[in-house]
Amino acid sequence: MIKYPTLFLACAATGYVLLVLVFLHFVRKDLSVLSSPISEYAIGPYGRWMTSALWMWCIAGIALAIGVQFSLKHSTLVLLCTALLLVFGVGLAIAAVFPMDESFQQEGHLEFNKLSMTGKMHISGASLSAICFPIAAVLLSVCFREGGLSQQVQVFALEIAAVCLIATIVSFVVFKASYHYFGIAQRSFVAADLAWLILAAIALLAKN
Image (cartoon, rainbow, N blue to C red; front, top):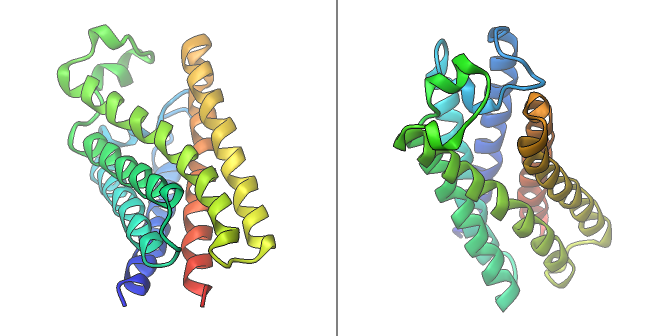
């Protein structure tokens, strides 16, 4: 069945992203956890590792979307969640193809109008992903009960999805209000994102 390899791929790809991000936090001491977005890891030393992580993150989202289609009963809500996960993956692909401007790293702040077209594409792709994912996570967590998953799994998934949604909103607010703390706000979203991806993939794999 297609279900199992796609869900295994989602788990493996998410695990790869997590390991790379942990590695980059250790080797790139020049970047601030408080203010620097994770996209800045794609600039300078070890940049290819961050780019590869974005691609694998994209693959994880798309693989989970496919796995959902073969694991849950088809409905309008499940179809919507699948579409959101696919758009999430596309947004990450855009962010991987178009890296953030190096001037952002040097200046320590972001003025969208001053970015190159590449930088604007990166921000647009990353923002698209950041918006789509928490919505998909919340809605899909609700679908888990009808899909035959235990209430405990559904509640846990919904809690993580809620954290992801709140962290995303906070990230956008901080980005506008006080960019000096955007890095830590974004990392909170990323942590919840990766945790939910792995939980969802494992829960669907365990589903009979």
